[in-house]
Amino acid sequence: METGPGRSHDVVIDPGSREAIGRLFRGDRFRFEFGMRRGDDRWFDPTPADHPALDERRRWLAATPDDCVLWRPEAASVFAEMLELFGASEGPADPAGLARVAARWEPDFLLLRHDGDGETRLVGGAVCFPSSWTPAEKLGLTVDAIHSPVPTVNAELGARIRTFLGRLPEGAVFERENWGLAAVPDMNMHPRLGLPRLGAGTPLEQVWLRLERQAFRALPKSGGVLFMIRLTVHPLEEALADPEVRAGFVRALATMPDEIAAYKGVASVRAGLCHRLGARP
Image (tube, rainbow, N blue to C red; front, side):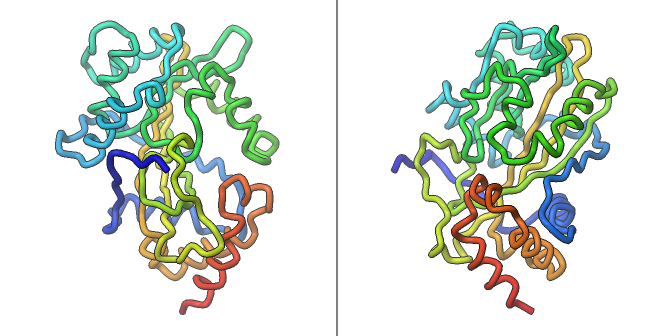
């Protein structure tokens, strides 16, 4: 197994993450939620130089740049407009400039662009902390094609996602959350690394919640959309400390369709998790 240059996780969960976890696990059953709401421009605030994620981002950008940096020529105008949000320039709009931004900005980010056929495609970005997917394989694909491996997403939300991306109002930020489970606290779970996966025997104490806070902003001059992903990794027991949140998580896991459980890599562990978490007061 190849191991990464570093691991990072949050044992003390910040209030923003607590709120996001509460929003994720409040339903009566599992469903893919659109869950979009208005955000703000704090996403574009400078990341403090001592932020713990930056060191790990820089290590991965140096060690595996081809895994992290995505670029097609169509990304140049989208990236240039993204830089305007920072009020700064990184020099030419090229992969090197993109990597420099990625090394000093906490979120991963993807650059999408509306093409002449009415499709929205992935044309660039920087992804240092993927959750068991290979970013380079998605470059150039439409949003529908990117989501095609995820069972039921296109059928349930595809039209709504396309409409949302095509009608993003200028200047507005929209946010949502997503989640997954892992057997390790590593932020970077690129499939190439061969990290351990969840199994029927994985102890509850070794299950980690991967929380993705996501944001979208239109880049109207270039016909683009900026998609940002801020990842935090938390011990599952600590993330579910609130009894109502824990009950919502158990409901979501228990009612998750088998094909989605298999896709998320939780099929073999969910019965045990539901039993152990559901039995708690």
